[in-house]
Amino acid sequence: KNQVEQSPQSLIILEGKNCTLQCNYTVSPFSNLRWYKQDTGRGPVSLTIMTFSENTKSNGRYTATLDADTKQSSLHITASQLSDSASYICVVSLREGTYKYIFGTGTRLKVLA
Amino acid sequence: EAQVTQNPRYLITVTGKKLTVTCSQNMNHEYMSWYRQDPGLGLRQIYYSMNVEVTDKGDVPEGYKVSRKEKRNFPLILESPSPNQTSLYFCASSRVGQPQHFGDGTRLSIL
Image (cartoon, rainbow over all chains, first blue to last red; front, side, top):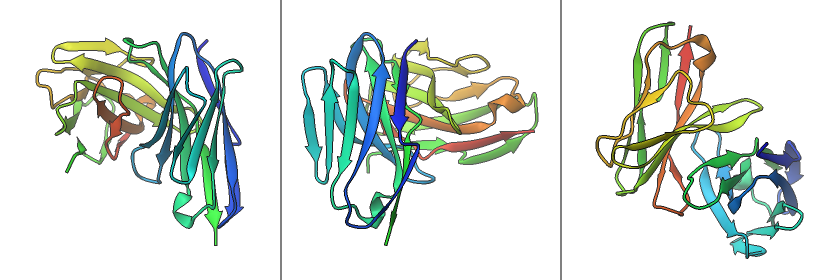
């Protein structure tokens, strides 16, 4: 069964600290993996997209890694800010041409001042 | 401004009363999709469309219909809503292979 699991479910950190969110997937055939940020009451917004051949991609203070062998991805947030408080969702898409997406349940991050 | 617009944003209705949630995008995207988001389950794909007059089922299509008569619009139709369709719904669009742009959601409550 195609599944995407994220951990932790929720996380609280102090402003300025770093954190790492995890995503494990059992999706086949794999096309790419994306991380989205979802603020409360809003739709998700794309942070990064990684294909099978990429193992690191950065977007400002966000760095995503992908290990296609172990089927794991992580999202590292550096020097967290209050505005980073949101849910972070890992999404895996099946092979190109199918346009089907499997979403994780997300990690809810709270950054405290 | 590039955007995906859903209407209504909130709706409370009763079982069996047909309803339509509209979705419109102004980015000329080929791909559009509907999702529902429930606590503890994440987003699940209901239907998607790769272009005008081309639609396909996602993971949870039962009880829903869609149509794609124009490129910019992709309405979600609940012919006979039931309480288990109470959820937060998102429409999204994208170019092929690109990240999806999501609307701000429609919260449906079916009594």
